[in-house]
Image (tube, rainbow, N blue to C red; front, side, top):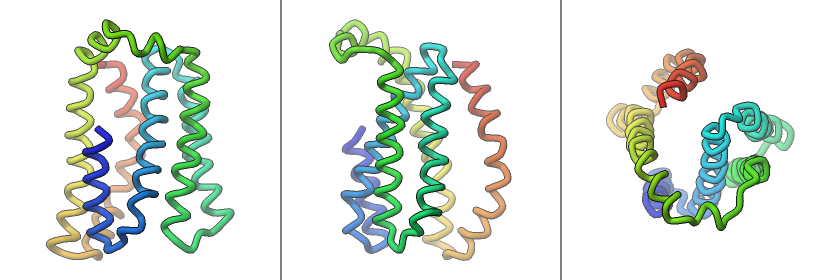
Length: 171
């Protein structure tokens, strides 16, 4: 999926007229994907605390680092995101105690794909439904509409951990 993400990120960089951001956007996305994959593997092994602590380190660490260094550019922000995500992902991979040889087993891959393809489809649709309204508002109405929409939608984000937990129970 990295090529698909790269195309989306290219479109984003072109949209904001900052093509120089593309390598950092790709690095941040790749690091976040490593973290996300390792987190889901820990959750699949029924180890939510092992998944939560590095996630907290990453997300809280991002906020604290950004507050501490007070970046003057988006480039610095994406470097912080990439580094904290990569650090948390590495910790989560170490907590998994798995080998790359076992993860390359074809039977394991086939079984994982049969189960995970529906989650992948759901995640893609979820990302589209989360991002599309903001982008459409920006294109057709303007930045003020996006800011108003975001201000209204932020309180709903408080329910995200509850919705996430329920979806984990269902899966």
